[in-house]
Image (cartoon, rainbow, N blue to C red; front, side):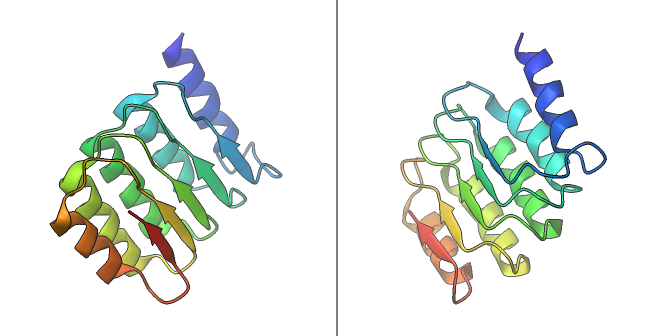
Length: 135
């Protein structure tokens, strides 16, 4: 069931299919790293989504890393909520690197993710003016 859901979400977000969807909330769906990876692949080509909520989804470092890679090339997403997962300092570091490149994100929520002081500092230091990071 989860695999079918992930394929459907991935297909819907791809630029060829989606011309109008601007907000996607998949919170509390246990998508894990695989689901985050599927969403990240779609975000690389999507041109309409501005808000993505993946809170409470058992996402770890690998999923955060995939989302970070997508943020490096995505030019439409303005809000990303990854709260209440388990990305840790490694995932925070990956997202911090993406923030150095991404120019469109204005809000990033990584609250309650087992992020230590080093990860929090990296995120705050990488956020450009106009981008709010909630740690």
